[in-house]
Image 1 (cartoon, rainbow, N blue to C red):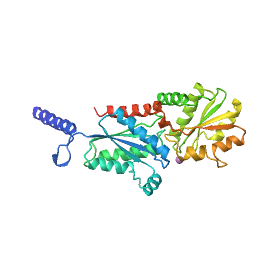
Image 2 (image 1 turned 30 degrees about the horizontal axis):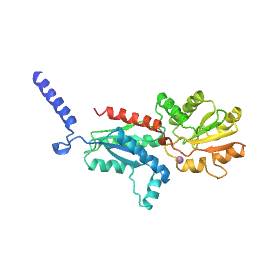
Image 3 (image 1 turned 180 degrees about the horizontal axis):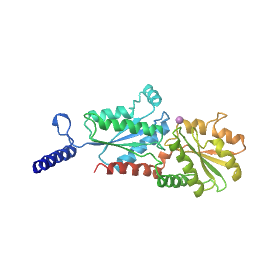
Length: 294
Ligand code: CO
């Protein structure tokens, strides 16, 4: 009995020791090395790339001394950039490098807006990196932008603050969200709509690929009697969707559809990652992930 206790105590002690020092294979002791991996869809639009660079700055200020890497989830974006000589890793390639370089603790920040398919894919692969032999001692994926009611309220408050000052209260604002086939996550846009409408009844959110669509919003917009509509992206960067599907001149762009219905349109080409108070939400999610390392 006593001996059994001593053995278990020794085993527990050893387990604690191993987790504290991060023993790798063959009992090699490895020092704790922390990194942050920023993951985003990626963009080929140079202005949008600048936005992502600004995010790096913010993360660097918030986590001085921690190494920061990027991973772009879109292979199409990575291929296009590679042709211009700009080589970007996928999150998985970036993680392999970090693993190879002996990092022990990695916090991954998903710069996605909702916890949709891309977020879940990222989360799944990141977890696998924590299970590999010689993998990370800890790897945690921080939540994307809208992950709670508090996030939704903060994001809505922040975005409303950045509506151009010239907008009059009777002018409507439509935010363009991406939308997702991942329905539970897509419902975040409906939640966002309720919060926005409570704060300002002339502000709506609609999505490109989810619910509500622009068509779903149009009858509600009509009831408000606005003649002018401000269009703003509700995606991390003002990339392809914002520039073409929202603000483009094609007959099926949101701007064209609204103009055809008699509205005058003002477009704002700024992604949510350009708003410091929106980036604060992402940073808080990263801080929560980091808190688990201590
Ligand atoms: Co898309």
